[in-house]
Amino acid sequence: MENIIFNPGDYDYKNFIKNNEYFVDKTNLIMELNKRINSNMKFFCVTTPRNFGKTVIVNMLVAYYSFFESKINVFDDKKISKNKDWDKHLGKYNVIKLDMEKNFFNNNIKDGIENIKKTIIDDVKMNDKHFECNKEEDIDVIIEKIYRRTQRKIVLIIDDWDLVLRDTSYDENSRTKYLKFLSLLIKDNENIVLTYMTGILPIQNYEQNYYFDIKFTDFSMISPGWMAEYIGINNDEVIELCQIHLTKKMFKLSNKKQRLNNGSINKIDKNRKFGEELLHKNKNEKVDGDKF
Image (spheres, rainbow, N blue to C red):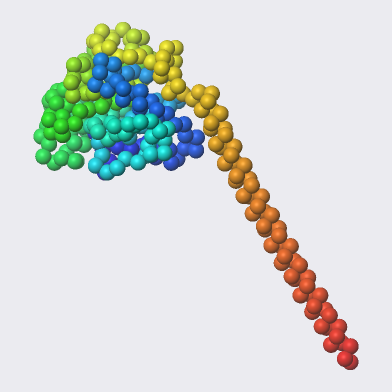
């Protein structure tokens, strides 16, 4: 059984690469994040409309940072592997991945928070049955206990962080509770060395952001900064995709043509052989007839 929130590993990222013909390699983003691990610039929020590849990036980061006892090889043939010390942080952290749509869609805030805490604890216990913790404890206490038990710092990755703020079914009181939960999880937490969040709208667009007083570097479609090349697909990547797939298409067409030609040649050979046999048979019949 795969972990859901705690160290989910590379399954989702591998699965995406395997089942999607048009894969764009954004792994060099990891090198940019590695520069900022455990620094004052360790808080990132990337906000774009849907279908701009945010979740794929999330799964990529989960695959890279998640602690795993076996060798992680999904990045061996990716662009990141051409960098010096690219694997310095590979598989070195406990990753906590929160998909807010799964945890809060059709859930009230209390149930969503309890589900997050319970799932984290259950995931940890799958790998360490002696881990002692319960969902009644605050999230920062749970994080502290995980660090003490594993002696590994945490990379926190949150997909769709602003779902609760966008969803009109949540009132202001619910949103305040949600933001206080996030603040308790992230703010002044020395056990978290990197926080990467995705959303639809920039943090400053929300009136309640004063409950969430954390200095995030906010990247958006309007102000992408150095993150621009990792958001969506740029012109160079479109050209690269075209070259790759046109080459593949031409190769397939060439093979198909060759198979067709081979098939035609085989048919010609069979027809020629049949004709020769028929001609030989007719000659023999004629000779036998002449005897009479």
